[in-house]
Length: 271
Image (cartoon, rainbow, N blue to C red; front, side):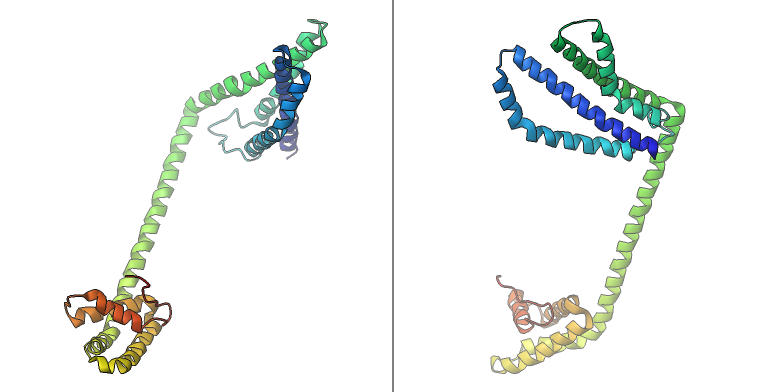
């Protein structure tokens, strides 16, 4: 735990130092290009919020990488060690130290001295993060032990995926089977009600009020039996018993109007 904490602290200091060196190089380059200091600081002031957000995202991403590495030690025997991670996150600091040692006796100009330190930081960080680390990871991946473990791990992941897929399909099939059994059970109870409801649809218009009361009672019974699905099944059975009428929508709308407000049943607003 202490080693992890030290790596996190080193990474934080390295990131701050790296960003400071990049900022110094940019400011010096703008100044050498002929920009006045007030222009440089004005541009920096407008960009401070964007830079802060970028640094925050950068720290968040790498802190997660340091704290919760997704690499597997068997497949990456070197890059998962604390020694390598310490070297990786300390690359900017080591580059700054190397630049300081190289520039101590090389120049008397303070600006050039700081530039040399910053360039040493940038060069070392680029070499470690962009060149050495990918090459090291590639070498680890081609090792026989790493390749064997990776193939076994991928095969295990695929097996787990297939198992989960089969379980989902099995649960879905069981759900469909239970639904079909429920529909068959409902069919026995609903067949007399569908016959009665079909008879109500064939009554004369002067019996409309009485027919509606009976239809509401039938719909409420279907709701208590199996909810909205049961009511829909009863409606379909009724239309099938009523016969192949020229306008099936009219019969369906009549039932829908009778049952409006029963449970979750609502008549269609538009046709």
